[in-house]
Length: 253
Length: 288
Image (tube, rainbow over all chains, first blue to last red; front, top):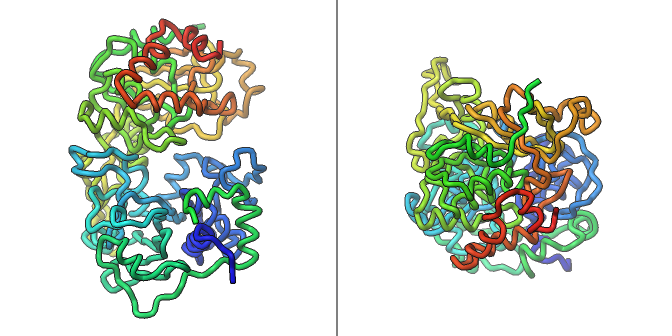
């Protein structure tokens, strides 16, 4: 039996989102996605290009949230250059989502009517540009019907229905590989690209996930458990990538 | 040889109510806060602020200077949401024109290049068209990838600035500017997109000393892009100005907490904003 925590399972599920990406910029945002991206490169996806969560490409396995960690700098990537990387398509970003719907439309701008928001959030940030140009995955540390909603209040990152409306030419670079939450992993590998339960984190039931999801999720008959970290992965997470245990604050056990 | 050194109040005297003002930096990083505070205590009103927003936007909203915010995000970084900006939007005391970070970049570039727009895929299919009602698309005059009609793209509109103010690490008397951090943000672009261009710097040095401060690539703001330069040590406080100093997180928490009630804001404003000069501010925050 593995003694992996839920946060560690989530980090592995985030790492799995980057499997097969090769030599592109992986841009995970959030503590557990960052651990996941760095874990992927340290193990099965060695060619990924990763940042220090600011303006540098860093070649070594960097601990998350440690400001004075030694960096082996392999490149310079200030914000404007990251935007150009995005438009080139050589990037896979994993963003947060305050709301996400069955087609993968994401909202991080505001809650309530757009012209009279009840809650002003961040804004559109880079979501429109990310989703129309790049592979975009999402990370939700608090899976609930308030996050997984029937309809998002504002479409910041576009989902598969909006992409279909644009047509095959305009949307030819649109791709949402994965959604990872604290309860499971999800994808859009269904005929109409609606969200499907891909794997259930150990200790979670399908019923719990369905109850925590505010829209009708595609639930296959056979659903695997999300894989556990290997012994090597656990050591990497605990001693190298997150020695301060910040992951447990994002997803408490 | 022209000497462009001026004060924060000289910058304010060059501005007028109703102007569109670009403010450099990014989130709670390298914001020209000494100039922002001078604007906050001036009688300017009705500003349109264009910013990769942080406490510059929040402070100017809280002091009633802003009619409209043009933004892709407003954040304090370590505190994700800017509470004063939130309050201003949620009470509808400011209008918003929303962007993707990319259409801010392209819009400033278009203004700098004196073209009306730049084409991009950024925004297609998203609600940016609802959040930015003036946004339009444009049809490419060239055949599309499938050999048929040209693609429809977003025409990111030029963001023309009446004035811009940015904060850098070093400068000289003639108005050359040098950034020593890891990211120039949109600062030099803001100056290129603006009619009146102001730079504040941590320290004025002799021109001949620039290359002992940083590499030639750090000389990002040549003097033909500046009309005035303000020497303001700790001018970005409480935002970061690496490598000179990091963000003052304790002070930022105090700033954020001041949004909790009108009384808390009045106290913060009296203590830290309504001070005659930047030197008085530095004395107040213990950096004199």
